[in-house]
Every structure is written in structure tokens, then in C-alpha cells.
Amino acid sequence: MSLEHIPDGAKLSFDVASAGIVVGTLAQLLPHLAALLTIIWTLIRIYETDTVRGLLGRKRSID
Image (tube, rainbow, N blue to C red; front, side, top):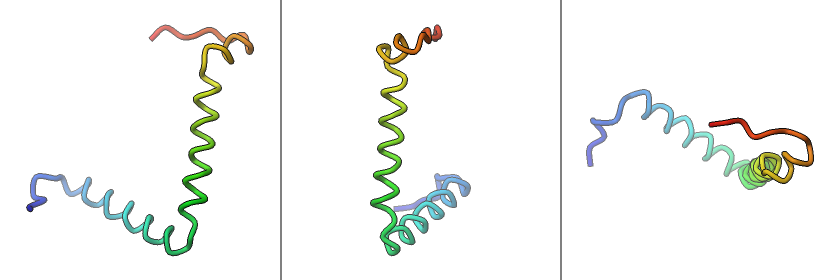
């Protein structure tokens, strides 16, 4: 399998992400970080619901 069709910048990004995952896994930080990011994402999604927007008096912007 050849990776010649993938730009060098993308390869570097994946290499850096891979190294971060390895370090995070070895330091046992990754599960905690994943949980924190999941909580933040869920709170953002709840904050953006129509119900919460209505309670806060925010109107939905036209996309």
C-alpha cells in the first residue's frame, strides 16, 4: 500500500496526532481527556437546542 497520493502536510498531521495518542495512552491521560471532551461536546449540544435557546431568549440564526 502506497501513501504517495496523500499530501505531506496530512501525513505530518497524522504523525503528530499518532504520537500524541501514544504519549497520552502511556501517561494514562487519554481516557480522562476523552471523557472531558465528551462532556464539553454534550454541553455545547444541549446549549444549542431549541429548548435552551427559548429559555435563554436566543433566536436561531438563519443558516
